[in-house]
Structures are given as structure tokens and as C-alpha cells.
Length: 237
Image 1 (cartoon, rainbow, N blue to C red):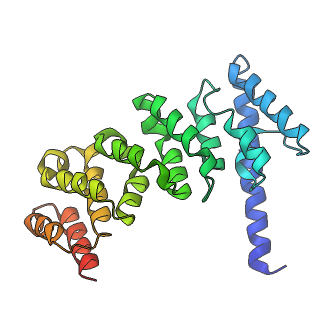
Image 2 (tube, rainbow, N blue to C red):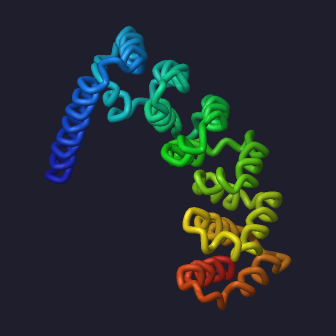
């Protein structure tokens, strides 16, 4: 074993132990939580598959591509009172090519409260952008049209740009044309920068994107200036 591999293993063990200790502490403090029973039920079913999982962190901290296990995990999305646990399962099953899970991930995301989307949306965003399931293009477009969802799913939105989706391009351009509306609201600034990154992926054959970028190039906001310059450079190649 190489030195860097040994150091990685030691680091992984330290991280795992810390996660287990944190879960044990959570179990002590939340003895009446109904989620404890759900976790126990899930772990019991996992053990029947032949795995020696004792804690929820065994699910999240161990790499596993066993489709039978992943399908079992997917059935528990939405069963927890605390959205955190469902979101972590989404993270586990949301790997490239796992298109069987796209629908359940999207459906559950759409049921989340705005607070849960804000706190846990990144798990759904990572999963959808890794799976890259083009069958649900229309669903992604609808999410893009929602300013709230577009903020919480930036990687998924950029994925639409990488696919050079024309309908998405119009939405990105619309966000940029209204940049003054979003730029001065901290939580909405993401819309502008996601739109810039997404548009930089397009082949701008008609020059519409470049014209829009040039119109905002001289804004006083330095971050927006730099992001716009970067997008222009990417389009010009």
C-alpha cells in the first residue's frame, strides 16, 4: 500500500468514527423520534441482504453499487420525519446512469417545503446532475422557470445549458435581461450566475447570447463583470 493510500484510509476511518459518534449522540438526544424506528427498520432490511450495517452512516459513508440495495433505499425516500435522512439517501442512489431513480427523486423534491429545499436541495441537485436523465427534460425546464427551484438546483440548470436546450436558453436569457431585479437580492444572485454559466455552454450561432452579455458587461457589480467576461470568452472559444 502506498503512503498516500494509507493516509487516505486512516483519514476515512477517522471521518467514519466521528460520524458514528455523532449518530450515537443524536440517538441519545432523540429517543422519541419516530425516525429512529424507520432507521432501525431500514437497517434490519439491509442486514437481510447480507450487509453488516449498524448505523445510518454506514449507508452514507460506504460506496455501494448493489442495485438491490439501492432499490431498497429508494423505497425509504419520504418515510422520515426529518428530511435530512431522505436527502442523504437521494445522495447515495443518485449516481451516474441510475435512471431508475430519477422519477422518485423528482417527485419527492417537488413535495418538499421551501425550507427543506433551501436546506437540502443540494443533495437533489447533485443527484439529478449526476444521473443526467434526458427523459425528464420537460420537468427540468419547469424547475428552471421557477426562480426558487432554479436557485436550489444550480448544477441541474447548468446541465440544461450543456445539453444546449433551446427552451432553457430563452429562460436563461430572460433571467439575464432582468438582472437588475435579481442582482441586489442576495438569495437571488445565484440566478444570474447560473444563467451566465449555462449560456456559456451554447453555440451562439445567431449572436443573441453575445448581444445580451455585451449589454450587461459594463455593470458596476465586479462579480457580474468577471462572470460575464468569462462567459464571453467561453463562447468565443
